[in-house]
Length: 109
Image 1 (tube, helix red, strand yellow):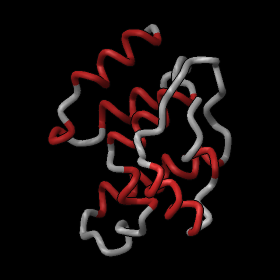
Image 2 (cartoon, one colour):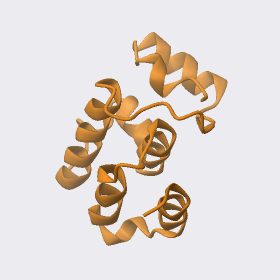
Image 3 (spheres, helix red, strand yellow):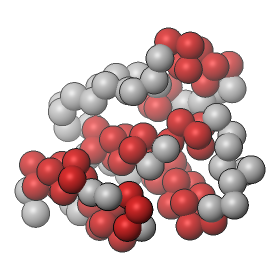
Image 4 (tube, one colour):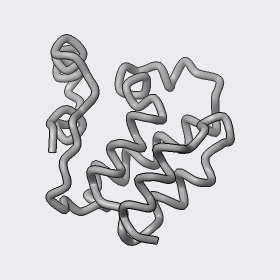
């Protein structure tokens, strides 16, 4: 599946349907850092960065977002030159930096 197809699938995906499709997108060899970050934030990555995962009773979500966070930090996804704008306000980014969130989650591509 081509990158554009993966992106279109993600844009049309209903997150109430679980994590199988996002996992398949992330496992695709065409998935890059921009697309992985988009999946992260669409899966409520800000709540994870804000520490709400520990308080959440959503074990499937926590497992998914933990794994994705670790893959992004571990450089599983390559920088391809495709742009991605981090969907956080300046205040949200400031709070994340105070919590020492890695810059990869706070810097636009």
